[in-house]
Amino acid sequence: MTSELTALARQGDPSAIAALMNRTLKPKGITAKAVARQGCLQIQLESTQVPNQTALTKFVSQGLNNLGVRSIRSVRLYGYQVGSEIPAWEEELVLPNAAEEPTILEIEEETSQNGAMPATMTSSSFDSDWQDESAPPPRRRSNSRLLLPLLAIALLAGLGALAYYLLPRLSPQPEPLPTLADSPVATEPTPEPTATVAPSQTPFRDAVNRATEAATQTQTAATADEWQQVVTLWEEAIVLMNQVPQNDANYATAQEKVSEYQGYLDYAQRKLDEAS
Image 1 (cartoon, helix red, strand yellow):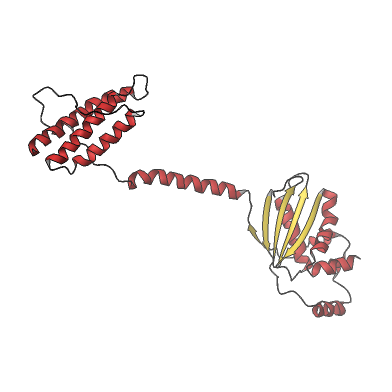
Image 2 (cartoon, rainbow, N blue to C red; image 1 turned 30 degrees about the vertical axis):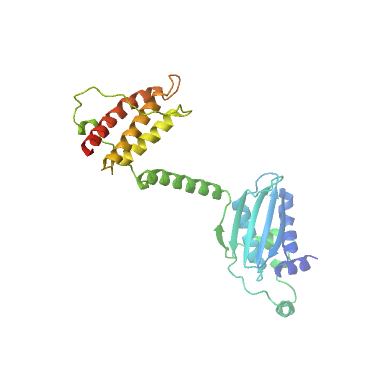
């Protein structure tokens, strides 16, 4: 029975391979299950504690080398803790002697020439089948799923920092508003805004919008009509800022803006007088 099981394992039978493994692993509290898909042997190792990745990877790689399974090109190991649906770790091996699957004729010829399978393959001890130190170890391709979330988080953090750094520099910056220092000092009392604006539910935001539009039009205004529009926008911005109630969080800022906007209004009014 042992010879038949080993022969099946050498042909790449996943159930036979798992059965050989379980002879050694089950007494240690570890259960192995195996399936084969397109030349890749997938082995699930499950225990009440997370299975030892390093020890089991070496155990499986040496055993498969000793068996000489030619139909398997790669092996993927999954370490599970009982009750978990997600593997605690994953390891991929590439067998160094993998080749095309042997034909039945090749297997029969080897058996007839030797009279039986080699002693290391027919031993009833799974350990002797799988722990021949002379066999070259497979190449390991670590693919631990535990690293993937960390890499994803690091990548997202890097992209976020890059966007935070670049976006303010890529966004178009508005032209600076004319300062009071650029304007002649008024020699007459500053007139109160004459614009009429209906009460607003959001006076601070509406005032900022009017001021932004006024600053934009200031950059291109040339005719009397264009400067009149700028004057009107500044007047409306001042009226709206004065509508901000005292219990509003923006009240103090609104009072500062009233004085600031008044200076811009005076500048626009002088430009209007010059263009008229």
